[in-house]
Length: 357
Image (cartoon, rainbow, N blue to C red; front, side, top):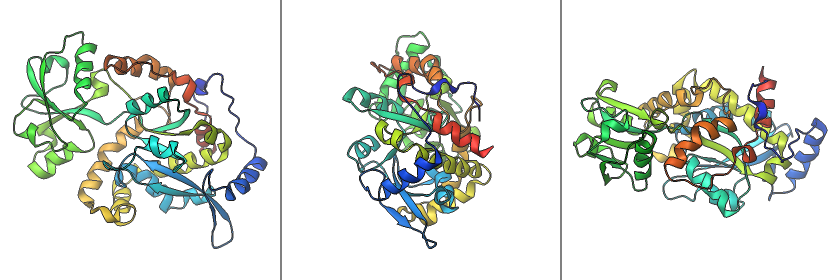
């Protein structure tokens, strides 16, 4: 697929999509080198699959529904790939720590801000895509006192998890206002908002709103979800990345992984129940997930996967980051941000999309 913003290949970094003959050599080499992409395993017909270990930034729930579909339908196997999914969660190491330690080949990181900060530690990452074209980060408020702008919070009390106050400061700064609010730190339960302790609550648009519906009986008309993007802080989410050397040495695997993933996420948009059922019954079977909640979460997240920019699935545009996303990060106090042209490589994604046309 030819994309008008195909300038995304990093400047000064050589990227070559390898020929099919090299793919065979690379596959054989990787089969004997567990330290690279993992051990190769044999299928029933003797075909070798190369393992890619993927560290997820959250538990194995429906947030990864399209990946589950691609896996269950055999799309990765068709690419000669077996994916080893490494679940995350509040008590798990970050994807950055897992990838840096060599315990995973790729990471999918929800917090793009925290990921960008690790470049200053000397990490050499390459991003090959972003699942969420719009980050699910948001403010949730009740419809009888809605918060859709900084002006709505002037002189009022707001709620959020530890560390999220910088987002409120950024919203005020981007609106040209001095911060004028009281911040009360809370956990991940949205009860303080329902109890009237504050007018806004920092949330994931795909999570806490469901709590309002299921635990408190509210309808979508009873609350307001305002994405950070609507407050001047758009950002990609669930960035797919790896060590630059690994990415460059395994170009065909990256293309195959993305091609299979695209197919899975396209199908996810056709029936939200499929990825939810796979999460409950297979990939997150030990988590006690609820099928109704998982289906609703999948419904809420798919528009963020598609995004507002009209770009192909998983697309990342360095110029969009520089012009629209970085100002919001800088307003939130993030400094020394790396140049997106140096770490974003869309060549593998472009090839994957082109082959699916």
